[in-house]
Length: 89
Image (cartoon, rainbow, N blue to C red):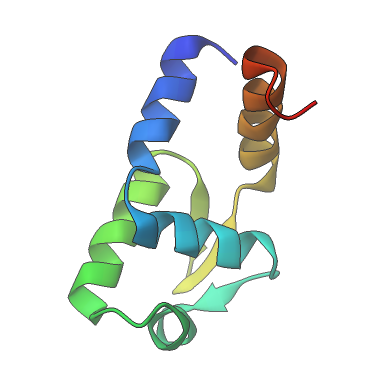
């Protein structure tokens, strides 16, 4: 992963609600829009805005109103963090 790509992903994750969404989806196979709305606790409009941003950054996938985490990309980002900053070793 290049620094530029990591920077884009960090920017995308710069909102606590988006971090919650990714974390929640990372630990489930998929969730529907309604399930996400109930678990995250924000308005549907706000949730859809955050979901679209995460989709645009390829951190999550959407298929017929079901959302899934791009675990490979999240794992790559976590590996980038642990190998670059030395704080996670």
